[in-house]
Length: 266
Image (cartoon, helix red, strand yellow):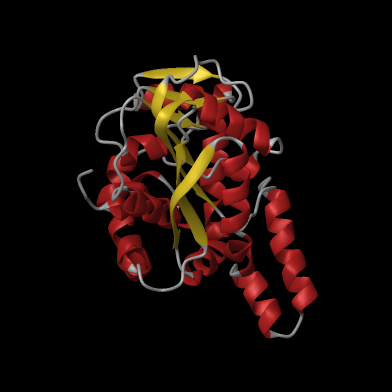
């Protein structure tokens, strides 16, 4: 996939607290090959698909009508489908790639969801996904400050409160993910930790600035009304502040990128 400045592009469409992490995910994922046809599982408002894919994926799926309406306006997918990850409305082996960006951590019935992913993948097809780990939340500025003050229990509560607020129920280690995937006929073939601690500290600090964007998103389905104007004004200023973190691929990462292969059936 052609590399370009995902940071500027995401900052044009979203507040900095979200844009930095999503731009890093675009950068990390751009090193991978996405075989066609592609199912984007939990496509949301289509912003990630719009920024990341140079050619529209075949299908974007989400269970929120509000998000699907916004995704339709973006035109980032060839088709949009309303559906639930634990009961996917597709035939067996329909896709070469199932893509999931920041979705699997929200699914209470995780094993049922992974079984459905395996079912709709052709043998040898790939699940490409990103998920947070508990280390993401431990590095939030509030959690890190409390830990530095020796208030370890309060630090953990801060992290757990963030997870509850954002509905994150699957904060697993690589080995735990490997086991869950294997139970569903998916073999973990690649994983990489990405996004250093500074990304999550800045995310926590800048979240209050996102409140007007969050209200706009609820009302009209978009974080930003005029991305062209923001790309020419606010985005370059934020990009200068965030560029070092965006480019840092060597510091220990907190989030997890995984590629799992659908095992061939005998």
